[in-house]
Image (cartoon, rainbow, N blue to C red; front, side, top):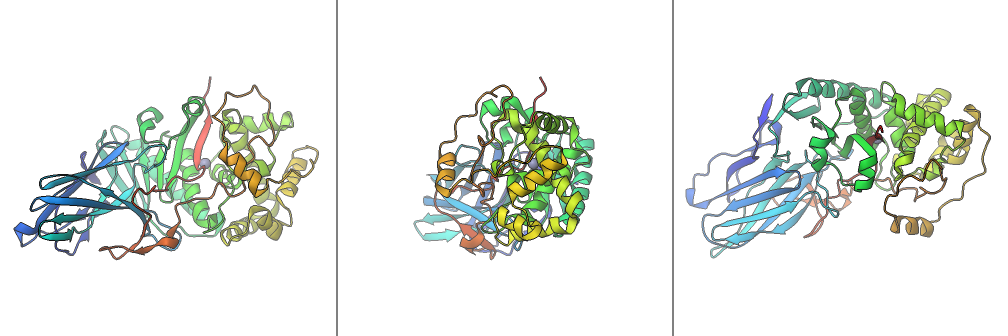
Length: 456
Ligand SMILES: [Zn+2]
């Protein structure tokens, strides 16, 4: 069990490149420099999920200091993939600092992210680059403990040991089950950040509108390809979110992502039980014949009133697919999407049904009449929809408006795998994508959350 300090990591590093060794928990241990005068000291700290402060003290007065930071974002082929950016430090004498905002409308870097950083320091005697330090971004309001089992590490605080143990075991079993279901292997380590409640973790959550948040509770979020935030002590939340790790590896290719209904359906299918909210959402939708065309739920619903139906129906469709056509075809569907096929083409190839055909087969199974093919959003129309997302409204009182949530077919795709711009890191030797001076670290993934309507 590793203890991770409240105020983060402080290491002395030399401006001369030193061999660095990675210690447990992703912290970096660096040997002392033999040349005292050349030492720079750098650190990263965080007092809360909103920002990270990077500091450096140089051996002499600074003219400028530029921070290069990178966040680990593994993909299927490269567990050491990084995305990152730069920041101009505020200089005062021999000291410089840079505050990286971590949770704004433009940028979301989740708690649990693994940083690597160094400084480029300019003094009267020239320019030097400090060696890389690693920093695990944890919520500085709490004292974190950690435990690993296999490739899963859980982080928690306070008197929440039991929840952490449950999360660790649930994640491992879900990983195994979904690796089998989708015939893939998640090869990289994954981290679970366990909060004691949604309230205590609110500042760490991926931002959504407060109107949505007020009506929908979030049990957990997959916020990176290797990172899950857990807000509810519930094994099915962890099983669900871990399934999203696997669906990402199995289906999110370089160009096309897994549509939300398939992603969420697989995640709910990974639960031991879908639970009463999703079941009743589904049953009410079927009873009123107000189920959602699959073409309308390629992206997560933004309507709180549809959340339970969206998850419940997605689960039911996935269960129908696996029960009716078998697991091998289901894995094949994911492979086909990963290879670059859009969902309708992938379904046609594997099942000889497009989304409307599958939807009607599922409706027939549930005693509902077939419906006509839904209009396809053209690229232009989809862009228009995406570009004019209305503020999340109050539920309209039960009417399920089909098509109201229609968005482009690949909006659920992730943006974290943009490793095609990867270049060699300045001193780390790993693949690093440097995306510009004011980079958005795009770890925010479409969907991936475990949500349900709040009980009134
Ligand atoms: Zn989910």
